Image 1: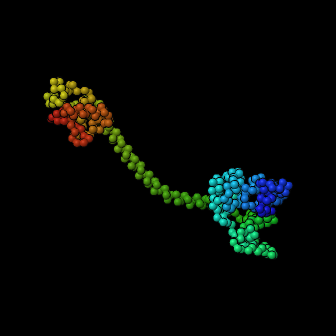
Image 2 (image 1 turned 45 degrees about the vertical axis):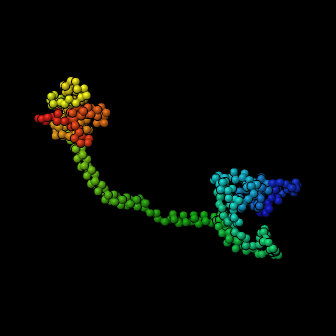
Image 3 (image 1 turned 180 degrees about the vertical axis):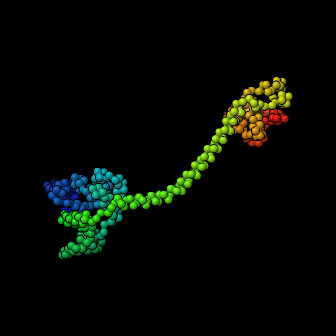
Length: 350
């Protein structure tokens, strides 16, 4: 059932109490309970604000052309708020006033449809078309014959969907499918286990061709690992030897007391500087002596620190080296290097 100008039959504001009440009540019954009796209804109107709210809120498919009146957009807001599960409200209301002629929104939450499209102009007589200035509208005097096949072709997918859901045709398709299943059951089934075994054998042959180069690579890694392990053992032995040397008192600094310069602020202080040096000064000088004994005349600050038992980054170590430099016991051959001066080893370590 299609009702054009539905605001006359289901008005929001009733003009004639008896007539409006009867027509509105009938339409409400069809909208609310007509489906159970096989009734479908299409309501057509220009002003949603003039259509009864109880009828408008029952719409399942909303097709809306341009709406410029705020009252008309407000009349749709209750329906939109109830059905907007996809956050389309802003896009919908924001475009209603600017839709072109023929453009429309189609919104159906039940069909999961929200789309903007264009409605083609009528090819038959349009009784609702606004005539141009000076145009004389002449309605047809006789109705044309309905070309059912042309309409069926235009409906296309809708007709095919109805045919596909025809119970008789569906039962026929089910019977044909059962017959196909029976025919396939009679066909000899392939030996799945044999096919799998053949595939596994082929896969194993391919894997063997890949394993050989991998095995060679593993052997090379093992050889390199053994060489690294041997080198680490050598380094460990050298470190142990260094620790042994550092733990003994065999390496001492040959410091002739008379050769020590008088480089102190207090010129009246004691001249026996070696006896007055702190243990930390002697450890650094002994470390320099160690490196000289093995032919390293100019070791780095880090090497001297290691031999003296210090961290080369510690402020105490830097302070000790600086004090020895001020006294003339050590010198800096180049950047980052430190060595005992000739005052400590005037004749070498013989």
